[in-house]
Length: 203
Image (cartoon, rainbow, N blue to C red):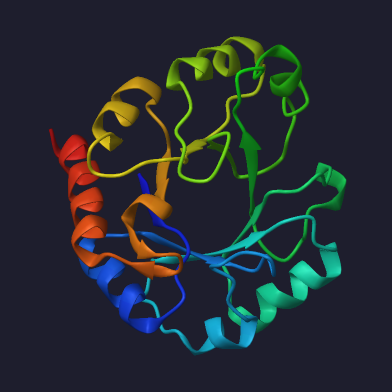
């Protein structure tokens, strides 16, 4: 399972996430985000073999995404925009993010039926807010092509076990609920989240 810590902005948090068992690290390249980090700075942050470096983008031009992938040595592009699959970058696999709100259902599912993304990342309706995980049933029932699902939105140590048991995702992703401030991780909360997720996998 992918255990992703998003919003990494410094080497200390990166090291703590890897020590806690993270298998993917997210770097936010949305300029208006409090967690924004420059591609050149990401290039200076050393991770570890086998840990995937994920760039988070919001409605960025494909050529610019591919340039950032090169500069920051990214393994995955996580796209939170209005791009179609024809506009996906060719330089790295894509995790396509989908906001899951109260109106999530048939129409939202079907537009991703043949999506070539490596995974669909289901996010909450707002930052740090979980969605009703039972809504994912409409995704399973509607899509013809099986998709890997990464679950995000308001996850922490208190609810990640229930989330995994409900959705059975390919991965889980936490950010705001394991921070002491935007862009600064609370190492205790982060480690507890990762341990809680790993405990489910080992049970």
